[in-house]
Length: 368
Ligand code: ACO
Image (cartoon, rainbow, N blue to C red; front, side, top):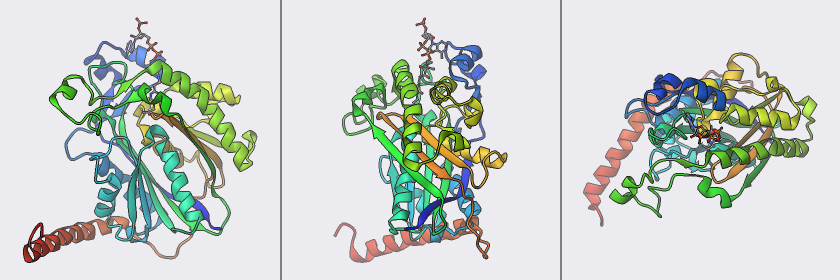
């Protein structure tokens, strides 16, 4: 059975930064309160219509392919984990597939909120382990700022935008993704919810007036749930993978609130230094938070090949999960590829396919 290795990584965040002081001009809050209760100082926010969940995902993906030294055409499967997709359909993963020119890839979106990236890596890894695919691109991308009520101080202080992507590849060399646990409890679905725009509450003037198109959250209950499951899921995945807590180099948790991460550290009797934390600069970017934290840890040299790590997260659903891996890095390869160069061809290809579709429609008669 092949092993599923994480061989490429990339992240992308919008340039615009929204600080706690900026927020204090919009709602009744202040920097001290936000830092004390959450640990967040600032977050990145999309600022124009061209910056979307798909555009951030494309940037992160191209970087991940570059690190893995893989062409977009080598990818067999794209999973985009997101709670803020570009549209209800088509899947954001399909938009990414078209824009990067991943001509051979199947593509779908996965919605498990902030736990989504863990679920998605596990799905991709299982597809590799079963020999169904060789190479996968797993993306976590969010533009939560488009769904936040900027007058609700309970939620608007928490979230940020961004994307992270990993490339997973099959190899007979042992290592990579070792085990994963995934959990859910839909009885807590109403604790963190975006009600409008789905089939229950399609957009109407009434749903707009009632604020149903904004994120609603019972912060205290989500907090209680999160502090309970983080340590529990970490222990569970370590038991499954046979890694001892003392062998673990890093825990890379979902970046929601420093107090939640501190509670997990206490629960596991580990110092906070063993956790990768960067939420002070990004806020909660939901499913993108784990890959963004991972990329930063790789870039500053904390995370190294051979390290044993656990990703652990929780989110709306309710969902939670953890994944244990031995870090690999790029697989050896003689060739050098430039994934960005495929972008132009991807655009031309996409344009030509549209033209062909149009011409066929004219010849054969539209709608017949
Ligand atoms: N600024 C100033 N005061 C505030 C703010 C604010 N932004 N928000 C709330 N307050 C006030 C409240 O009104 C309350 O005042 P009161 O005592 O007079 O009633 C007081 O501060 C305390 O409010 P609490 O809600 O008790 O604050 P708490 O310490 O619980 O922190 C928070 C709130 C930060 C939201 C916390 O509950 C939390 O982090 N929960 C988890 C949220 C989370 O992680 N969500 C994402 C899940 S992942 C996903 O799927 C996207």
